[in-house]
Image (cartoon, rainbow, N blue to C red):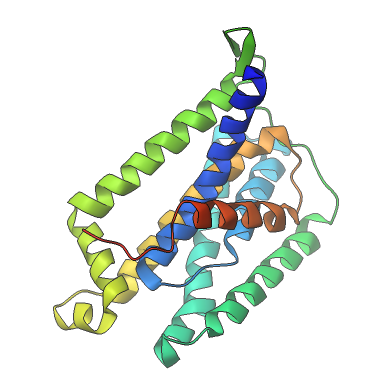
Length: 238
C-alpha cells in the first residue's frame, strides 16, 4: 500500500508542476494556455534528441528548457497577446492557444517523426527504502523539486515587486499600465517561467516514459485537472 502512495505522490508532483505552469500564465493574463503540454513536450523531445546525438544529458536538458521558453514566448506573442489587445474579456484565446498547440505538435511530429524514442536515464539505479516500500531517486527528485518550485512561486508572488506587478496586471492591466508597469514584459516573463516549470516537469517524467510528439496532450490534460483541483483559477490576493 505504501508503495502505491509513494508512487502516487511522485507522479502527482509532476502533474502539479504542469498545473503550476498553467496557473502562472493564468495568474498574469487570466487565460489558460492550452499549449502548455506542448511546451513540456518540446523540452522532452529536444533533450532526447540531443542526448541520443552524444551530448551530455545536463546540456541537452538546458537546451530543451531554452527551446521550451522560446516556444512559450511565441505562444504569448502569437496566440494570446493579439486576443487580449482586441478584447481581453473574450474567449478567443481558447481557440488560438488550442490552434497553437496543434501547430507545435505537428511541427514536432514533422521534425522528429511520429514514433517514440528513448529518453536518457537520470539518477538511474538509485533508490531509498522506506517502511518496506522503495522510493527511487527519480521519484524523490520529483517530489522535492515540485515542493521547492511551489514555495518559490508563492514567495515571489507575495513578497517581491514583480509578484505585485503580476497581481496588478491580472486585476486591471489598464491601471497597471497607467502607473508605469510594462504589462507586456510582465506577461512575457510569466510565460517564460511557465515554460520552465512545464519543461522541468517533462525532464522529471521523461525517464519514466518515451519521448513522443503527442505526449503533450495527455500531460497537458492532467496538468489542467491539477490546476482546477488546486484552485489555480481563483483571483490572486495579496
